[in-house]
Image 1 (spheres, helix red, strand yellow):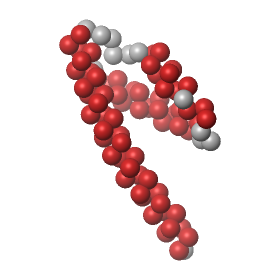
Image 2: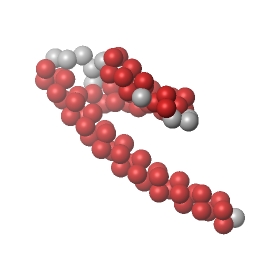
Image 3: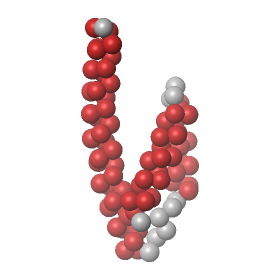
Image 4: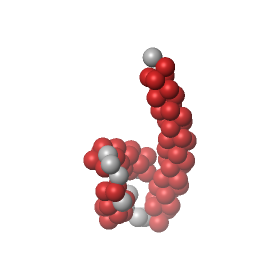
Amino acid sequence: MDKIKELRDKIDKIDEQIFRLFDERFKITAEVGRYKKDKGIEVTHSNREADILSKIGKFEFNEEIKELYCILFEISKRQQR
């Protein structure tokens, strides 16, 4: 049981970092959304998404990360609208 607690503690610490980073990212995407609205720029920018996804290939769990990022893109676009 000590091993599982140790592993879960590690996950909890990583999750806390992820939560902070997501929060920071969404603050910036909200700012991007305001900028796009002010400038009349389309919300969706497929080239930008493709550029981001192209950086994921080097990671061991790249398919899972890609899946998460596709969800993140959808949330960000919804937020910008």
